Image (tube, rainbow, N blue to C red):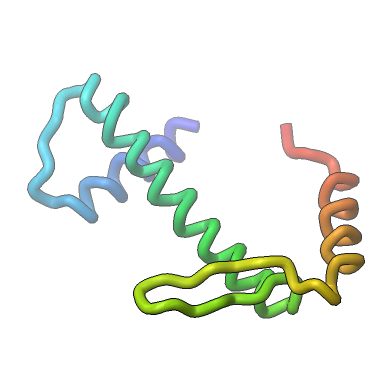
Amino acid sequence: MVEDIAKDVLEYFLRNPQAADDLEGVARWRLMSQMIYRDVEETSQALDWLVEKGLLTRISRPGSAFFRLQADQRAGAEAFVAEADDKPKPE
């Protein structure tokens, strides 16, 4: 647990080498920012994976992309979600 938080703090400071803050600032704002950054990165990877598997379609627009369910893959998407729900969650 300590190592995970330390990694998050260090990643923030590596991406923002001019940053300086006190304990409360790091805990409240920097780590929240880090979690959002990580969530966006992980979500991007998940979206790419789902597109590669043919479960989602990527619709490219200038400056961004949109994603939607691949209509003919609905059953496969439902099976994937059901399988993921059946797996035990780490405690």
